[in-house]
Image (cartoon, rainbow, N blue to C red; front, side, top):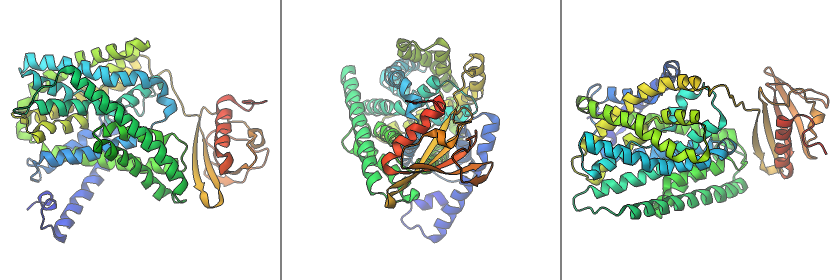
Amino acid sequence: MTALASITSSTMDLDDLTRVLLIGSLVLLVAVAAVRLSVRSGLPSLLIYLGIGLALGNAGAGIQFDDASITRVLGYAALVLILAEGGLTTSWSNIKDSVAPAAVLSTVGVVVSVLVVAVAAHAFLPLSWTISLLMGAIVTSTDAAAVFAVLRNVPLPKRLSGMLEAESGFNDAPVVILVVAFAAQGVPGGEADPWWVLLLHAAVELAGGALVGVAVGWLGGQLLHRVAGASSALFSIGVVALTVLAYAVGAAIHVSGFLATYLSALVLGNMGLPNRVAFQSFATALGWIAQIGLFVLLGLLADPTRLDEQLVPAIVIGLVLLLVARPLSVVASVSWFRVPWRDQVFLSWAGLRGAVPVVLATVPLVVGTPDTEWIFDLVFMLVVIFTIVQAPSLPWVARRLGLTEQVHSVDVDLESTSLMEISADVIQVTVGAESRLHGVAVFELRLPKGANVTLVVRGGEGFVPERHTTIRHGDRLLVVTTSKVKQRTERRIREISRGGRLAGWP
């Protein structure tokens, strides 16, 4: 009995547990080490994790795994954590100007892309219209982790990075709705709903998911801020639990749980909660674990002996998606917002596919859509091939389009830690390279009464500042403030960071 088979067995014992922990810990260590290779090669780490799964499967270590239902369930769980991490670490100020075009790209753009791919699949493969639409819906969703893994060292304009970030958080929800609907229609006896019914159903689910997400995020954040203790670890658990609760509430009332998760996380990450760095770091760690586990699981499910049969169809569908469907969806969606053509070209090329399409390829297997086993293999090959083609070229494309000239630097980073027992907060200020806090004396900050700079860390050495101590780039300041004036203090520091010592002078 293999380790993976043992974990699903009702007779699992301590020896089985030992083998599972051994394999699991080794996979995580290899995955952590593989990140360095990913950075050097310019390829997203998802390819390495998929490779680990393939190596552990039938063609490698011999672990037997072919349960699409478990893959779908665990895949959805992983996607919830990945979306939560994306929302919690997204700055609203960076994406607020891009939300409208990103929302249109995630809805209208999705419909355009699905239709184009469906026409190609019906013409070239050929497939029935229902399965063609199912194929188009499966491969439409983009992957934020894949895009930003290769762009972390390529500074993009805020308007462009914000649009990519927002789109990746929004587009999973409508795609999931379409995939489930088309897969159900493909089941023998399933009836195809009129297109307007499907769109109305999708609109209701998305609107409901948005309401649930905002409500759970805001109400939960207010409650958590009042009842949580000073422990940043417990506070972080509470924040992530709220994002999971948003998904559960949304799914329970049959609206989009994925959109609810992302929006609740976005609200929580931007409402000024204490311990922001702590809960963002915790969410990022959970997101990495979810990504690693998900991609390894998908690699296990794939059968290398069948993949080559779908090589040509995967290339055909991938080329249509890359060269026709994605550009048309971008033009149809963002041209209304006068997005520069260079941005539109980059958005078209940056539509990387990752975990979501491969997870969604298990949906028709689970719901019983006949003769769709090959879809998983085709999507798996498409994701691997076009990630290898697109990912390394993204930095080059950005430079050729002149998009790296507009560098957006973080001027100041604020992190607050709650001291609830004494109604106080500690704000940690990191002075960035572009911050105009540089050269400002402590007394020139003119902080509200009840706030004071208590410590400066410079070059690894900490000291208590005096009134005339001058702030420098790279300094880290600890500001102790009463809870009553915390927000005014943060607002004052940001004003001076952006406008200099005279900012807000009466």
